[in-house]
Image 1 (cartoon, rainbow, N blue to C red):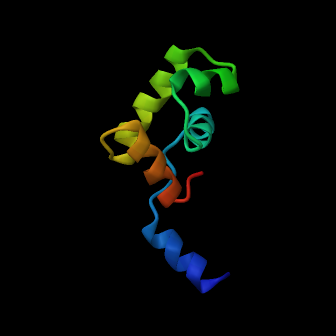
Image 2 (tube, one colour):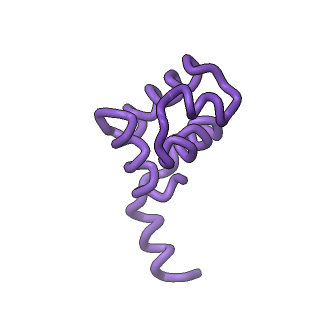
Length: 77
């Protein structure tokens, strides 16, 4: 095992995101509003909004943009 990867795994929090939250987050990181994300994923805007709202406390951030950045920074995407 790569010692760097082993060390990183000790300090990187476990991924708390569901598969769908990860998918929404991946699309959201490329920009766009809730409706655009929903259209790309073939979901309703309300469903995307709910997933984005659940990302905020899981990432310990204050808004959806910061949640996406936190997910990227933690290697969850």
